[in-house]
Length: 268
Length: 333
Image (cartoon, rainbow over all chains, first blue to last red; front, side, top):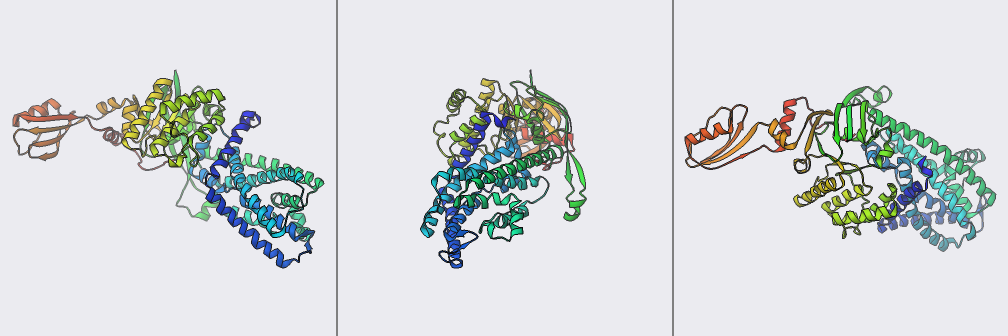
């Protein structure tokens, strides 16, 4: 496959860079989204404050850790680019053709754009989120040395998120409207992903179910490592994320191939 | 040497019958076969500039999509630059370029130079090759001042110049232009046409053009293919097309003396006001000379002009003559 050649890497990384630049060409848009993020963070901090005393904890998470946990999960959640609508429109209108006419692979093209756009919001969200969280509960108990490792886990979290989203979006080859799938997916991510609370507070059976699925590797695991780093846990999370990435990539490429075949043979 | 050869290319789509209920259609869909392209056969020489015209739903887009490898044909063969498009799409993509007038390839919020840079990576151009090529295009297309302005702030004409320059960066050998002058004003249209003509001349690029603008076709192409249902129903030059296919002439005269009426076989009076007459002459029935002589019997002529019908009228005539067209169908798929 051409994916591994350096020219291909340059191709897609520059594509990501371009979509990043295009996104921040609209600073007002970025700032308004960040403002919403700040609001969510503030409200939940107040909520945690009311539920927990200053020194009590839930499932091993102190109030301070919970706030920083929420900062991390919300950053990932709100930064992830909304590519689904565009992909669905492209699939339905046949605009996929404009991408296919270039020496690009549709899936990796979308992936590059997803990463570029997501990164543009992530930077702002983490920046603003950290300021707010620091103001509310103080500096987090994490050493700066682990941050590059956290970044690796976060990148894979975004990759997983992308693979799930493009998988759902590609279903547009077969169904009229993929909207309901995305609605369900976002609710699944809220709960099984551990958006608001760490999944450790779930009953044991539910926690097990949750861990067996990929969703907690998108939000819960990166955020937990962020507030409470542990090398053994890091290695384990990385391994499982990689496994899910490979599985989902295979699935996405397969379904894409089927979809294209359907369109090119039957005409959608 | 042929750049494009197509033989018996066919494409049928299966379209879900819309009349069927939604739920019922989900489990037991009924499909109707729609033949978008039925047996297209033609070839285009290297360096040729060909107009590909037909009404909406005539199979233009479908044919182009097969030629660029996006669609698999149902049957038939095609070779573009010696490659079978749908088998070697990625390889072919490196050698062809396209501009779709209604779909921009430029990044809307970024200046054109960013898109050019991105394309240099997409087409895997070496830095030196890219720089030299861009330099030349900037010069020819007069893009110097536009390069650093976000695309959203460019006028449509300026944007189109950038679009066309963008599709030329990788030195494609075959270009597909779909409505390249749509929405442009007269001056911008002329500019774009000049540019397309110069690319064709200088680089010897094969140009495959679809347009509803007959001006594009007449000024650019020496060859016109009229298609319907993906069948080439006429393959000619724009001039020949008019001469051969439409035997109608329009004659306008101003007589020195007013006349009551003018009746002559094969002549329809389009307008008659005082000494002025506008006539539609069917040269299969009568000749221009006969009409002239008949007019002279009534009066001396103060002024006369004879004109060909417009290409639009010719094309309309062709469709009417060949019949069986479905106007306003299809579109992009």
